[in-house]
Image (cartoon, rainbow, N blue to C red; front, side, top):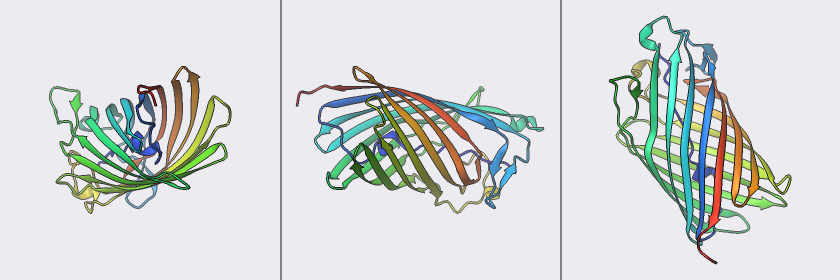
Length: 275
């Protein structure tokens, strides 16, 4: 039995909540994250099991994200990312491999604010242009070659020195039974003038009806689900610079590895147009 790895990354433009960036403001972030090794996975019966092939894996990811306030209620964004996945430890050498995952060559997004107060509401649309697939020479480069499109409803409110936001959306994958629903919430507050801690939860449900044993490994993704928790700290460094540190944990899932993710980001924000 081969356990497929489904890389599910909610776009940072969705995690930013329903609030529009000020018109003329540019925000850029470079980020990197790593996943701790594990040989356990959430099986199709929703139980945590040892990998049947005795494998362990780790991955690293690097990405860039930028958003710009195009209008008072319209924020546009772009992003790109590349992943490195190593799987090893299996008795069968064919199950030991290295992959590069260009998650997508380019993601294009627009967040349109509908209501600002007392509860902010926005619509998010996105399109991810796919990477290709190359098996030889090693290391493999993986990309399923399918367009992905997002449609999210975002809502949130601010309280005292804090904020809370919610999201509900669907991702459609071109010509593939891999569409997925996602819901989540995030909440944070200003603990100090330069420190913003936050906590979040997210659930992703695959709409695929293809079971694992009906799908070969090179036909990702299969029927999968996951529930994850995120905690993080945002530091204001002054002069428009910021530092982000976060930890994510899969609390429950189906056909996903038991994972811990640690990441760092460095951001810069600047008002390009005078108000």
